[in-house]
Image (cartoon, rainbow, N blue to C red):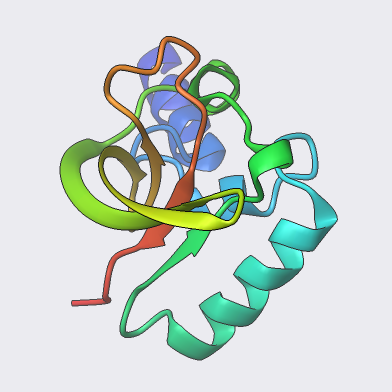
Length: 124
């Protein structure tokens, strides 16, 4: 009976099947209202096709904040993206850590692991 209760608890908390990255992107403790509004807009319009959304430079959370709250990601992959730094744009290869279909991209060598880009994979 206790084993059944644990399974139900894990399913109810979302941990058994992986945390939904869209919920993380909507967390006011992680991302600013400005970013969350942009993410909602992009998610409503382009979720089926996928999209990338850059995080404002002064508002970038650490991946550690996400994993401390939501646990370990389901998957990761390296992706080349264009990232803005001040008044210039640079092509960077980021490691995206995915929670279901939403990934949080960080520079592999960044000791702070600041999230530079949030990426939604196209729905399959």
